[in-house]
Amino acid sequence: MANVDATLKAALEIDGATAVALVDWESGMSLGQAGGGTLDLDVAAAGNTDVVRAKMRTMQRLGLQEKIEDILITLGTQIHLIRLLQSSDGHGLFLYLVLKKDSSNLAMARRQLSTLERNLEV
Image 1: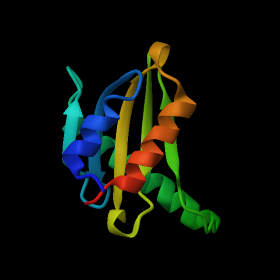
Image 2: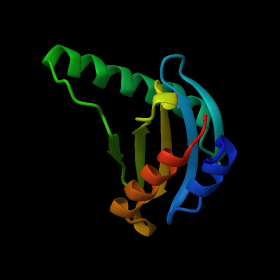
Image 3: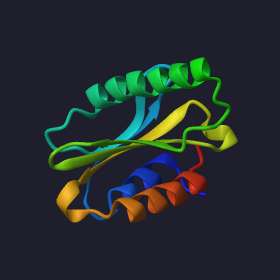
Image 4: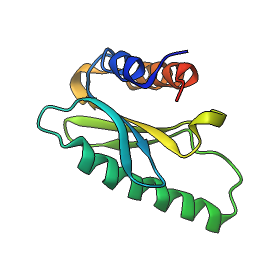
C-alpha cells in the first residue's frame, strides 16, 4: 500500500504527466497535489468537483446503476483524466491527472492510474 504523497509522486512519473491531485468531490478540496507548473490545482480541484457532481446527478436521473471509472476531457494540447476511486476507503475521492497530449499514451495512463488507485491507502 502507498500513501498519498507516494501515489502522487508515482502518478507524475506516468509518461506525459504534468500535474496530479487527490480530490474530495464532496467538499471540492484537494487532499494532496504534485506538479502543476502554472496550473492552479486548487482551482482545478474545485472545478472538476463540479464535473463529477454533474455526472453523478445525470447518472442518477437516467437510472444508471453503474460506477464511473473515469472522466476524460481532451483539450488542444492536454488530456485531463478524472479517476474516481473505487476502493472502500477511497469513497468520495478522485485522482485528477493532467497529461501532455503529444507525449502521453492514454491507454497506458489509464492503466497506471488504476494500479495506483488500487495501491493507495488514504
